[in-house]
Image (cartoon, rainbow, N blue to C red):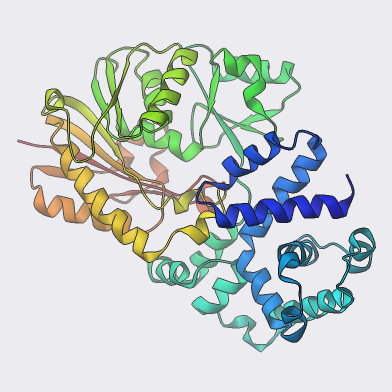
Length: 442
């Protein structure tokens, strides 16, 4: 397909992602299913370009706005198309002259001039006298994040760490697998992938993970359909380790969703004991049932629950309770860059109330001397430390357990020396996660 048509498709998908509330990966998959004439190279260009435009949205838009009169003269119906061109020049380092020859946008005689202006403005921004000033506003433009988000990270992490965090969140995430040790070993799974000409390497932290070196549709493989592995971020795999169930334990996964952690827990428990996987979303639980059958697990009990209710039969009964609450999901921006623009301070505030309520409700399921793990996939202190501190202030029967004491058996105690467990992409190469491990005393 010609470059001009590919860019047109990318601009169409980009508009769709900005307009709809569904995640970008879901919308892109739907678009490809309705455009079956697109080849694999076409799909790869469109997907990578759309994700890149979402990652660098604010910077590209700021550069366009800075061209003033030329941007104002752009035809509205072509703005996303031209936004794509700016992205390809500034971030993709494509040569302006060659790109214009390939696309030939009718009705835009000033296109070459506009793109050259954008390059000049970008160079001045990067090398000008303000380059050493790392204000929230500047970092917001440079790395394309909302100002309020950058401000919160600056308060928590300081300038240098915030810069590294923003840089890492703008990089694509690796394709990481969790090997299903109920059916195979990590080594055997790796060899099975090699027979499919798929190269992988062991994850650095998770004892059950493999990173696939080249992105592909892994779900078509027979070894996936046979339940040899699940796609799961390495950080998510480590959260399951912190739950630390015994093979005979009774476990409650309070917000199971698609069930990735329930399945990981079942493998840790060697398909013994019982896991109650609860969620309010019946559609996601249907997906979990399919994954359970594929994985060969028969100890997970899937149950739909109503909001603000806890099954009476689970009160004071569980050895381990995982409360992986709904959160802003900002730790997964590498996978869903559109999330940058859909999360607001207001949505975080709404989530805080829900997170505290869910933690309070499901703490009632923990029996005496049992463990409660609160987890999120975000790096916002208000969703993490603050929620746990508020909970502990009202529940003196719970005390914090240091995560390192649990991780020691996997030789991972060096991951944290603090009372809470934090993972971040720029330090650990995982998605951003938080967890607090608590024990219920008498």
